[in-house]
Image 1 (tube, helix red, strand yellow):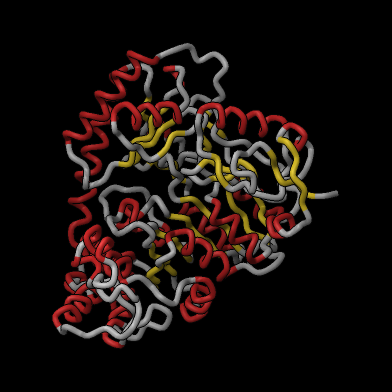
Image 2: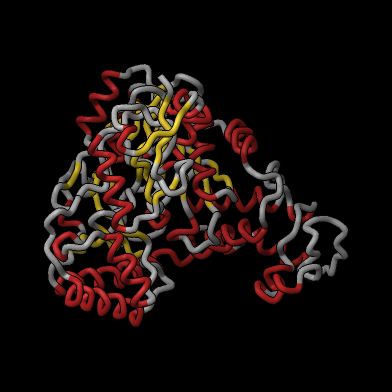
Length: 482
């Protein structure tokens, strides 16, 4: 790795500013914490002293010319990208900037339907038309898989005027599509390739990882540094390949991103990139070691199934991210969300999420052998205490919806609210999703079916957090007026 990766320009500039003892007559109004003692006591002087406004020595996120520019250049080099942009609105803002940079009204975008809500929100904003490749399902696990190469070829052949293909790399569960071949197919047809790499930061820095989007030749990728990369929540990086105009991308970013970028977030991106560039292989070797140990022990408990590379089939599961501790709960007769709740309420263990038949425990370099043992012990006890018949359980975390109209047209259409059961057969005018993972069960413009309403009721009964709808209790759905 280049010696320059030792540098952290934003972090260094903030330290220099602290030593200058500047008297602040600018925002934020807490004035390095002096104006809000309770907040200062909670966050500490070290944190509050660098929650500052853009000033000349610290550069400006909207138009970087010095330390932010240098930090972004170092990030681009570390990730193997042509350009990189620091994002302070989470990977949601990265995904939306990515799509808004390449799609306008009525442009077609080929993508899997099991995308994050930020992707569909971006289509609401720009008016792009989704061409969904409904992912195949692993019937045993009840999870959606990657994009089949044949399905992608068919979608390209039937939609030769599409502008873009978007790929999840990986899915929440760790499933990877054949991103390199899909990228080559798209480029042969003059289409751009975007990758949602919210859960794939480590692909760029670990050893023997699935292929990253930039290595595959993709045009843009959204990387959630705060997940496996170690930066602060809400910080993200948008990567661009050689085919993108970085000045245009910056203009798109500035349409929606704040003009008051948080230096807490920016410096965390800078420091995290430095850490990954210098120590990434060691960091992720440790993560793999912890995860593989946990997987092996959990699989010896019985009934729980922590799956891994044995799922690989060369197509819809082209590769698997072994840092993901995804665990199927179906054989113990409990929904994943039920195990999630028991772990939190009875064992003080907070995992990432639970769905209808799976849980995900996010393992990082911040974990210890002691905590892994605690998780394993809790799961063994849950099996002993709570195992029951699986009769009546729903399996799939994903239902293939039928798209009636574009997300934008449906979102802005005149609507009325109906009780769930009465909404069957109508077109949905809003989002319904479990969060996390934030993949919509229903999106604007999709047909409401009996199967989908059954799934929603089952998710409610099992205690899933259902969000997105105007009715906070989700007893009614907004449907389009005919």
